[in-house]
Amino acid sequence: VSVETKTCRKCGGTFPEEAFYKRQSKCKKCTKEYVKGHYLKHRESILAYAKEYSSKNKERVKERLQKYRDEHKEELRRVYREKYANETAEQRASRRRAGKKYAQKNPERIKGYYLKYTYGLNLDEYQALLESQDNKCAICQTIFSPERSLEKGHVDHCHTNGHVRGLLCQG
Image (cartoon, rainbow, N blue to C red; front, top):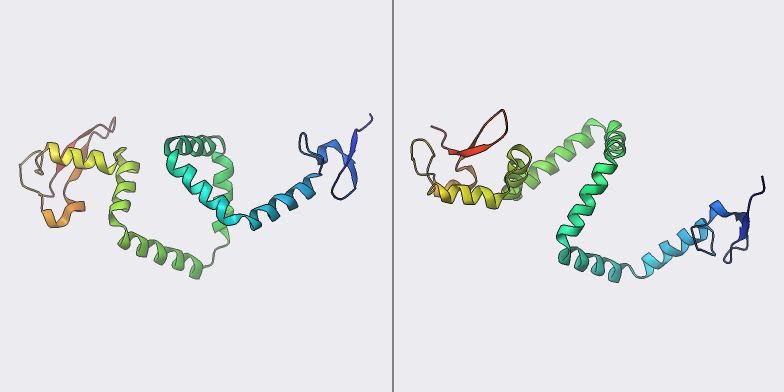
């Protein structure tokens, strides 16, 4: 079996075709070095473009990210497990402190994550549900406290199918 070879125009080395990306005249090693150098040289403009693109194409970016996560679920789990497997107790405590600090600074965002993960509701849907109930408990009609806006109502839902029925007070 003869192996086709190519010569890299950058380093001059002769390598099998597998050492080159498709339609490239530089070997993979030289291409990676070039890309890294280009990124370091133009980092600010690349990041600005990426930020602008992301803000203009939020749904598209979100769909692409979700597709990637779905296709690489096992690999991502393995990487995550490996990342935290050798974590010391001190590192774990530090990560937890940082998480608690973030939660204190961003209670609305944390509430949003909780609602989305637990009930499939986003904050706008939660607020719409609250408004549709005139800021009152669905059962006893007690008015929810305005100063505790994020703790207003507990989500009443069916445990069989997850259907959200309304918001209830603690009483």
